[in-house]
Image (spheres, rainbow, N blue to C red):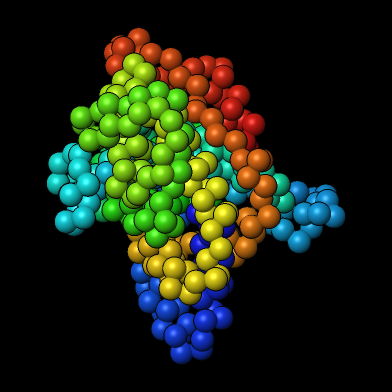
Length: 330
């Protein structure tokens, strides 16, 4: 997403002084943000330390790794999100959670999915209304967002991984669908038939070109594949993310200013970020730093888990494998 964001925003600056000026103002004001750093203070894992010996090929790129918590929320606020289904209309949960770790020098990246049904110790989190939530043991991972929004989601992930989240990025249902449509759809291949009445998705095994609504249904499907658990859905989500990255890389947005603007508008209008990514210049800088990242060097994994002893419908981190994975990314 950040690669295409950097390309899109940079391209807008060359479509004409007046038009670009208005477009920059509009897109910059699209972005919603949360001041996570102020809310959490200093009681957090340390930031990544810069490499002291950058190679000749990476010297011009950031010399420290960066970690980004990416959430797909099931918010039902607004008509578009409600129309795209699921959950109640009074709150939201983190329907999808991925820790994106980008190596120092931007030579590779690892995307780690955290199953939303994972039982964790949810730390005390600051609340918008004042005060803090109580520590909760054996809480579902996705409850952190429901309790304390992005701030609590970040704190819970940092508590689970002992890795500092340098940035936060959230996209909701309608935003994801708009982005896929703006890119002209996305092509994915499924290994088995999918028949899920809950997500309204019915696909035969094979290759399909999906519009935004259908791609969202694929991302949310769990009951029509495998054993119906969240782990099967994560596999579909990882396939979809890779396909979407390939679609972004192959789309020459600069040949069509209209499409370029549509994609940029879809991105900025659908995301919530931390204050460190809350401007076009911040997103451009990040996108520029990632534009040389080889797609073959992006790996997707799932945090190792096992069925929870207390509830076979939930999972817990499998140790020591989970700790070894997080340690490898510090």
